[in-house]
Length: 504
Image (cartoon, rainbow, N blue to C red; front, top):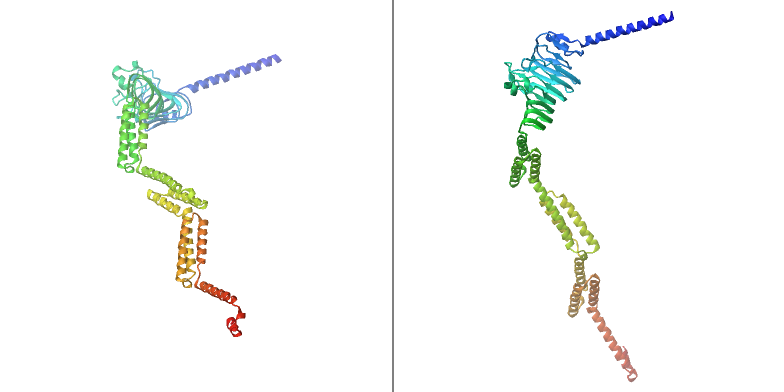
């Protein structure tokens, strides 16, 4: 009984598992079943829902207005065409792959997408476009814009004109890698050139694989990697080209751009900023630079020539720079001249105190020169510094001043004696003493000698007798003479009355 229950339980489990597996298979199968659409509304719903399954057209569909998709989708056109009376846009940042049309039909009779313009902005996806494209009359590359980052936009269709005939394929590649995968055998010889041509109008593309086709890289467009094509016309910048025919205008265009840029660079300097001669020098540098650019063998050499020309232009001084240089040179020359002028005075000719004063005058002069705003101000500062230096006395200047002072003092001293106090003869002697004293002061080698000469002259003046001194001396002399005569008289030889007269 127990074994029977176990067997029944196992059986139920297996049956249940089978049912679940079957349901999963059925659900998975249902999930992969395509969504068939017959109207514009159904198509717009299908390309924007969250169900990841193919979309199949049941019939031709016309969308009145723009058709916008915000996710990757696979579209089987099933032999039908899609007409968008407006702009068809795919814009998503999702990663993955999508395709439009299976591409099994011959290229000339393949399904087509007709729209005013198309924009594919799927920067993380690989998009394979197998349908032919018909845009508005007079369309340009700006009407077919692709951004696919480092992934690919693979174009396996052809562009059709208004009459349904193959025409030039032109698209603007903002970024990414564009592959034109139409093979030679898929295109009639008469339509080959028009139907398999990619024009990269702008932006930066990582690479272009368009074997057997023609690729045009417009001016300003960049292909970082390699272009593989039957024919390449390069007017922009391409890393590497592999093609049966290469028309490389990039160097010539680059040269013209650089010559124009050189003109602009020079003009930006401003003619009014230069003297006439220096502006002529700028123009000569531009002319020489343009010739060097023309002579350059490749873009690298063009860059070298361009940089060298700019350097030569930069070497030409503006009027302001010349004035600044002239002022700087004037200051340098004047600073050196000031130092030389001070040194020429000779340290030995000054006391230590006065030589220090000269160095202070030099320092102050240098500061004033450095601050001068123009050459005239430099000259003024230099002159003032020289004047300050000249005002500082040398040892000789000090001695001469001292001599002058002492000479004057000697004259004052002599005058203080008073001419009225002397006889004419003695006053003349005083003047002679003054004259001799001045001469001795003038001849003195230092202040000590000046003092000695002054003192000697003063002593000589003092030695000249005044009238009063002469009178006193005379009186003393007479008194001494009388005393000597008196002392020589023998009073015993005289009578008493005579003695009294003598001694009175």
